[in-house]
Length: 365
Image 1 (tube, rainbow, N blue to C red):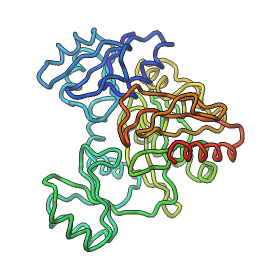
Image 2 (tube, rainbow, N blue to C red):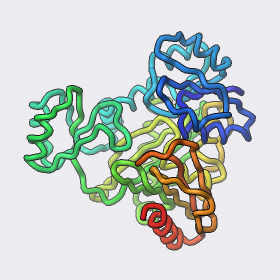
Image 3 (cartoon, one colour):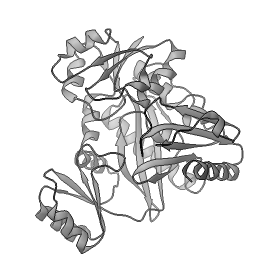
Image 4 (cartoon, rainbow, N blue to C red):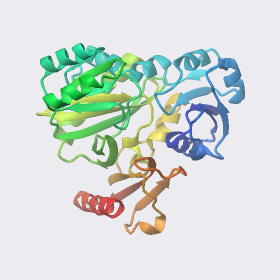
C-alpha cells in the first residue's frame, strides 16, 4: 500500500513512522515555504505551487492508492480533483467545513450539539453589534488561518473595543462569547470505511498562549460526567460527515455542560499520548481507518501524559523520569514552535500529575 500525505510536518512524520509496521510506503505534498525536515528520508516529497494538475501531482506522488491530510490548510480544489485518481480520506467536504470557523460552528449546532454563543462580523459595526448582543468579554477570530492562538483577539474592556475597531482587519470574522471554563478536554476517534468507530478516552488539556502545552488521561474529575456525552457528540459528527479517518473534537466544560469548540480532520496534538498509553496510536488507527482494515485497541493501558516542547531543545539525557519517551521532530528550534513532545506514564494517577508538573517546571523554568 502506498499513501500520499498532504503536508510535511510532524504529524505526517508520525503517521509515516506508524505505517512502517503495516508495510505502507509514503510520499508527501508540500507547498513552497513549507518545512519538510520532519519527514526527511520517509518518502518522496512533491512540491505543489498551485498550478500543477491533480494528475501531475498524483503521478509525482507515485500513484498512491489513498491521499490523506495532516493539516486543514490545504488546497481543496487539488484534494477534490485527486478523487478522480484515488481515494481521498477524509473527504474534502469534511476538511472544507473545518477550514472555516463560522461554517464549523454552524455545522456543529445544526447537529444539536452546543458551542459557545457566536456571531459573524464583516465590519466594525458588526463587531459592535455582536459585542452588544453577546456582552463582554469576547474573543474575535479570523474565519480561516487561525491556529495555535494566531489571528485571535480577546476583547475585555471598552478600551479594547475602541482599539480593535480602529485597527479592524479587512476580513470576515467570528465573534465568540468568552467563557470561564472549568477545563479544556478533547476526544479523538477513528472511523473506518465500514463505519466502525473506535474512541480514545476523554483527554484533559492545558494551553499556554493558545498553544497546547499538556494533555493527560484519564480525566478523573470529568470522566464519568462527560465521557459518554463526548462520545455521542463525536459519533453524531462522524456519521453526519460519513467521515473516514481520525477526527479530533476539542471542548470546554462550562457550568456542568460540554461545549464543542473546534474540530480537526486529522491526527491531533492532544492525541500524542496514544503513542504510549494505548496499544494502537491515533497515527496507526488513522492509517487503518483510511485503508479499511480492522481498527486497533484504543483502551488506556495506564495513566499517561504528554508535554509539548515549544521552542525548547531537549535531549534524552535531560529527562530524569522513568517511563518517559522523547519524540523530536527535527525542526529548527524557534520560540513557541512545536519541536517535539515527551510522553510519560505512571501506574498511579497522582504520581503522574506530580511527574508532569515537575517535568514542566524543568523544561520551562
